[in-house]
Image (cartoon, rainbow, N blue to C red; front, side, top):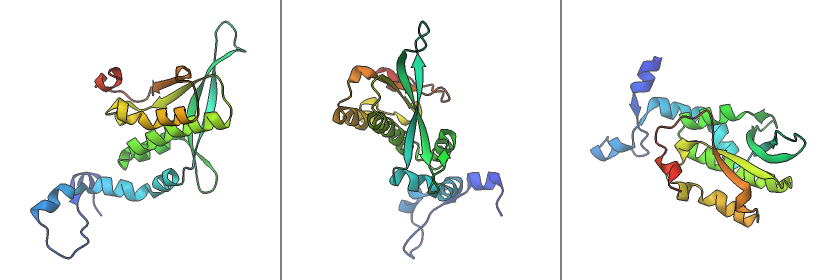
Length: 177
């Protein structure tokens, strides 16, 4: 049994052929910790592939008139195979560990748009994203914008919002779009 430090510092590579290790194999090696995280996250991969995600909507109201909804915050939830809701913290923790953060974050944004349309929400939408998944805003937001366009939602109703739990030191990609 390896210790946590050993798992974190051990590199592994799976080879399909029986040939010896070559120098060209080295860049494909991964930390055992990462491979272990991927193997523990098969539920996450299945959930993303099967699109078992939903959004809950939290109204944002005006201070002057709390009965008037200004916007809806889109709150991601996963759906287990047993039809139990999976909180976003568990989804994003597993996606970071298994190097699927980009895929999970993109699926969350697409789900928010899809669910807003399905529920007939007509107010502004605040759609969260994690800044660590947006390495190129034009590329990373292309699919959600295409989905918004296909759904005929007005662009002026959509706000892409950086999640509060993620700190980022590199704000450049977020300011150039």
